[in-house]
Length: 170
Length: 100
Image (cartoon, rainbow over all chains, first blue to last red):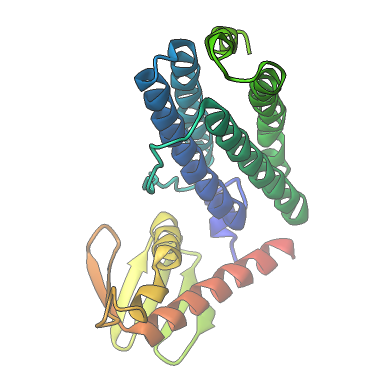
């Protein structure tokens, strides 16, 4: 019997499902960062707003990278539905804590796909995802740096303004 | 034609010569390309069956379009589960076959 599915798709079919879930996760992250950017803008935290606008665009780029990978390798990428996005936060600290949690969630998901790739011997996808492993380390570090600043300086009075100015260097 | 999997109401076949799949449901026969077969699997997997039990879909009926809307499948909860299992088994069988 011919292996018609393998002739059509270079990636494992179960891995393709996981990649589609990852696409949805990246889209959610992009929408979530956009909401954070909006909150920062409304609270005159212009540098933080700019930071999250950039993050939102970056998450979309990640989504598109996976989307194209799935389709370029014969799979079927699914355009994701965006779930409900929170728009209210109590402080800048909460915003960055949520951002860090989100990045950790994405990292765990990427690591899980890589684990499954090894199980299914889908080394092409594993190789593709290595870029994301490095990227996630950097993303987590960015959020952690800002949270460290908040811990060091507090957010009372001028400190919040100073932190906002340093966010662009994160 | 090679039988991939068969259940009470459905059967899936692969035709090497025509490089396609066939899905039968009673007397209905649908010819699917590889992409269409994968798309059907994705559609079935994305169905939220909990909606059949919590009042969001009280009829428990799902309508699926297959092969770029050439066919429509009207399925109840049991049939959705049966077809999902059939496709899971079919893809599992093909994966096993690729290892040989």
